[in-house]
Image 1 (cartoon, helix red, strand yellow):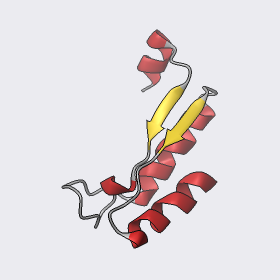
Image 2 (spheres, helix red, strand yellow; image 1 turned 90 degrees about the vertical axis):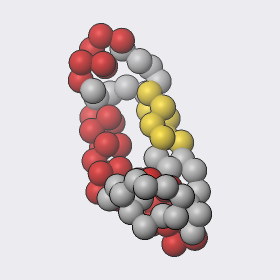
Image 3 (cartoon, one colour; image 1 turned 60 degrees about the vertical axis):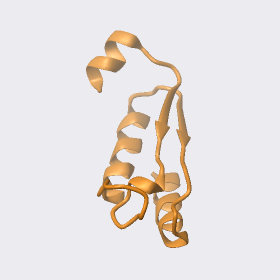
Image 4 (cartoon, one colour; image 1 turned 60 degrees about the horizontal axis):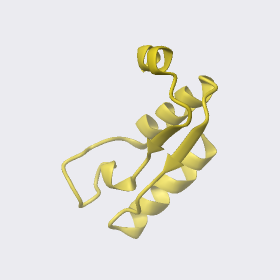
Length: 74
């Protein structure tokens, strides 16, 4: 990621933080943890680039709630 930011200097960076990638969501085979999403958001915010965060709702209400608050607080 550092090399991409250095070479291409994207601004803004659009970060897709969809809840369907979380462990336990019924959409697909992804098995990501919330901690991974939060780490990615925090990492990119420290790089001082304009960051736009987009997300898709989970197929379950529980998944959507799990995703929204921690990523927004990151």
